[in-house]
Amino acid sequence: MDEMSASEMGNQQERLDAARIAMLLDTDGWVSIRVLQRSKVRVANLTPYCGAVNTSPELMEWAADAMTRLGIPRYVQHVNVAKYEYAKGNKAQIRVLVNGLRRVQSLLKLVTPYLVAKQKQAILLMEFIESRLAASLKAAYTERELQLANEIRALNSNKGGNFRPISSETVRAAQEMKSMLNGMIQSDLTRDRESAAEMTVPVL
Image (cartoon, rainbow, N blue to C red; front, side):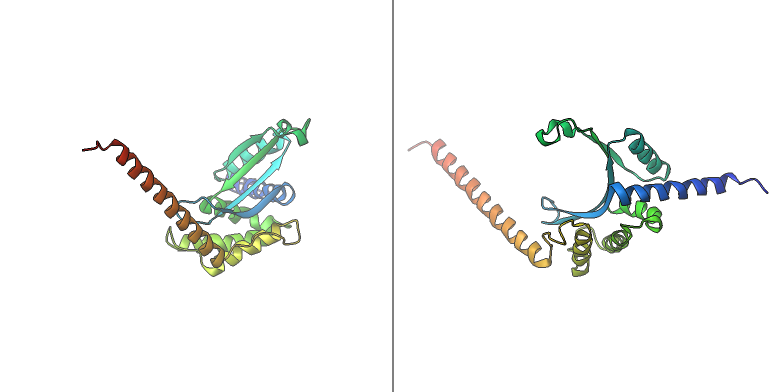
């Protein structure tokens, strides 16, 4: 039997890493999208994110290293849950996180074929990412993109789909509320400046 070439060995290691990461995401991780309400670009910012959490430093160090070998930007977060009253004595959590359109896309291209429990979320999230990358940076979310976000969040809900869905109506209502609050703040600042000016102008 011919010896396996370095290229073949590399491809085999890549597939093995991808399969193991997929198993970690299936069991101790998430393939999801989160709604941030404090975006400067738009009221609701939908951010793809994947990750896994475990208390084993060895396992999570391996996961971080494997993602590095696969060329996937990630970051590691250590969470000391024992500082919370309800978690006294619990081990610290280690989280390996991948956020953002292109980073999550790179991860999903490799692991989706190996996912089992979260493959549907991955397929929907890839559609969302491809749609956003094809649009301009500040483009409003389409109805299909909002639908994809809600389907992904529903699949990940552990309360039978009981979550707050986002729609063009909720985005519009949030935008109107933000505009109203900004207007009130600006009015308050204007009144404060006028009051300050009145106090500093000398009486003739």
